[in-house]
Image (cartoon, rainbow, N blue to C red; front, side, top):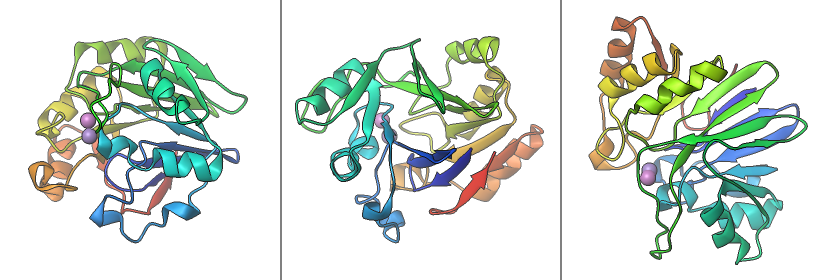
Length: 225
Ligand code: NI
Ligand code: MN
């Protein structure tokens, strides 16, 4: 499972030649101006919720690649009305393909499109493939529902928001990593906008103090689980 960070909360995940993009927001992110969205491969576009900083490039990417949009019912219907292909799930449900599965799990947040359309309830995903499992929390507060995840899944890594203001910040992300029983954390949803600017070195140190690792990828950088 190869994970590439495209900035903010957007990640590419490559599994045995299958390309997943999560929450594409590239053309609107000044920190990701060196990423050309037209070169990104996608077979599946996973969308956690409808906020603009998670869906801005969904249409462009889906039109170009023909990828299947996997998200909650309301989001998939929204794009279906624009003739884009999708597969709806809802909380607790798992979308399964030959190469991976993606379970839509609870998040505490809101979800509406930029035009005011209802975006269903927000979620996160647990992606499992090749004996590895990756939790993508989406935009969320820390929530006791996170304790449900390790009851069914031993996580290899977790992508957690750490920027505070719109989501949990570092202190709560450390609590979240305890709840999901995973000490390998990949940070996201920080520094893109002034309200979510953080001191990354201090964040890494706080995780270290709790015997956890906070991995911060360069935008365009990758790691393999
Ligand atoms: Ni959001
Ligand atoms: Mn967001």
